[in-house]
Image 1: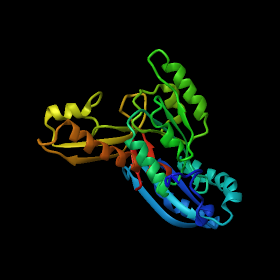
Image 2 (image 1 turned 90 degrees about the vertical axis):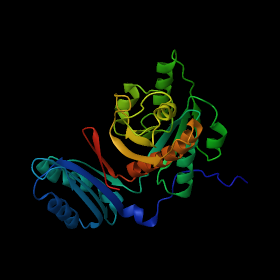
Image 3 (image 1 turned 120 degrees about the vertical axis):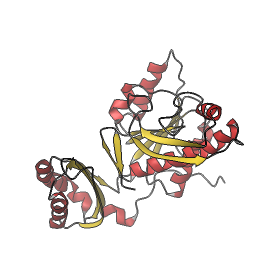
Image 4 (image 1 turned 180 degrees about the vertical axis):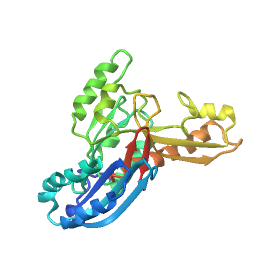
Length: 299
């Protein structure tokens, strides 16, 4: 029997049925934390974690992540959201409440390189990615058998310069608004605004360099030619500006003159898979707030 076969999403843990997270961004000012805490207390909620960050005490932006328990949450969430509107309006908040019992649904896009996809599947199998992987979409058939062994649907949609628009339309039809996050796990195609816009700040890419250096093709060859002493990877949200979206996570490793291009690629693949998995995990755990072209990550 294949030991890595697993179907379905992650099970709901007992405590998750009554737990939720609130994400808030608003202009900074006095009384925000007190108002949120008082509101949750008055509705019978128990705060289990709270994080805050202010960009500038005078005239800057304020960011807050609150995790709380509330008995009977599923039947009370609509009223909770409605009642919070008054506070949100008072402080000019952008906000949302996410129930832990509602697992985020992921679509993973991949080409031929499998290392980032494999890492995500391993972490999902181990329960470290608390989400549902709804599908894998690829412009190559190479990973079909492996992905389907996990019970995950695999959609092969070839892409050529002549069929790119048609292929992307098929991708949109497949995801169909039924996923919460799209992950480009070394998907070697530039996505168009038609895919970016409906998934604004919900489309994560892994870039094979420590941005903004060595953008474009053959980054490890560029790095080798320049004799770099560190290489890295960057996970970021996708925007219309190529490799210019809000950065979520980065990491680096030291290298030396002894490392040839193949060794740089090997080291780079390890960094890429770890950095992307971190970014995806933080997103599904509602730890990221985006402001302009930057992120606040409560990790």
